[in-house]
Amino acid sequence: MNDMTVPNPSTATRVPPPAPLGMLAELTHRCPLSCPYCSNPVDLEKRSLELDTEIWKRVFSEAAAMGVLHLHLSGGEPTARRDIVELTAHAVKVGLYTNLITSGIGVTYDKLKELADAGLDHVQLSIQDALPDNADRIAGLKGAHEKKRILAGQVLELGLPLTINAVIHRANIENIEALVNMALEFGARRVEIAHSQYYGWALENRNMLMPTREQVMAAAATVERLREELQGKLVIDAVVPDYYARLPKPCVGGWGKQSLNVTPQGKVLPCHAAETIPHLVFDYVTDKSLSEIWEHGSAFEAYRGTSWMKEPCTSCPRKEIDFGGCRCQALAITGDPANADPACSLSPFHAKITSLALKAADSGKTDYVYRSFGGVEGRPKVQITRNNGAPV
Ligand code: SF4
Ligand code: FES
Image (cartoon, rainbow, N blue to C red):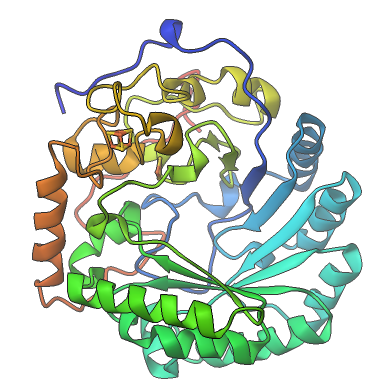
C-alpha cells in the first residue's frame, strides 16, 4: 500500500456541500444475529462506548436543522437500545422521516406499538432466506426466521409500511423468487435484493459467499421477470453485484454527497466501510457539530467531488455520474482508494476483480466466519483513538 494516494485537503473543494439527504444512525453494534456479511466493522464498538440518549437526541436535532430528511435507525439491532422509543419520538418531533432497520429479533409487539405511537414512519426487516433452516444457519440463530415472520405480521397490523431487505449470496441466490414471494406474503410494499458487498465481515467470508457468474445472470433474469409480473404490487430494488459488473455504482450516492453514518460511539463516517481506509481521520459528534463535520471534516473532504481522481476517471464522461465508484472497494482490491473502482471495465484492475470472483465462487467453502465482538481470529484489533489522538 506504499503507493496509495493520500488526497491533500488543501486542494479539496471549499464550497459548502449541500446537506445530506439521509443519515444512518448505528445506535448500537449489539445484535442477536451474527450474519457473515454484516456491514458493521470487524472491530465492533462495545456497549460501554455507546453514545447516551441526550447526545443522540442532540445529533438528530442537528441533522434535521442541517436539512437531513431521512433517518435510518440502525445497528446492530437498534431495538437493543432501551431508549429506542424516546430516540424515535425525538427524531419525529424534529421532523425527520424515521426508518427502523431491524433484524426483527427481540422486538416485542408492545415495543413495536410504542414505536408506532411515537410516530415511526417505516420498518425495514432483514430476511436471510426463504427456507427457514437455511435462513437460521446464515443468521447464526435457530428460530430467527419464524420470529421475523411474526414481526412482519405485527408491522402490518400496526399499519406501518414494510420493506424486506434480503442480502444475496451463494447460499440463497437460487431462492430469489421464493424470497420475493415471501416479501409479498409478508405484505411488504418493497423488497431490496441487495447483493453482498465485500468489505469487513463479508470480505472475510468472500470465499463462502460469492455466487458464480451463471447464478448472478440467472438471478438478474428472474428479477426482471418478477418486476414485470408484480408491477403495481411490489417494488423490487436490485443492482448487478460489483464483482460481475462492467460499470460501477455511485457508492453511497457519491462520497460526502448524499449521506453520512454515525457509529455507536459517535464517529461520523462518509460510508459504512470508510474505516477500512487507513489514512482517514474521523471526527466525533461529541467533539464537533454534525454540520461542521459534514462540511469540513477531513474524511468527508478526502474524496468529495472529483478533484482527487486519477485516470481513467479524470477524463471519463461518467465521473459526475458514478464518482469513480466505491473508494472502499478500490482500496480492498487495488490498494489505493483513489483508483477507479475495479468494478469498472476501464480500470486496469478490472481483470483482478473478475479473477477474484471466479476463485471465490469456486472455492467450495461453506464455513462462515460469523460476526462477533471477538473480531476475526488471528487479526490484530484496531486501536480506536479520537481525532486528537487520545485513546477512547
Ligand atoms: Fe466511473 Fe472512473 Fe470507470 Fe469512468 S473510469 S466509469 S468515472 S469508475
Ligand atoms: Fe465506502 Fe463504497 S463502501 S465508498
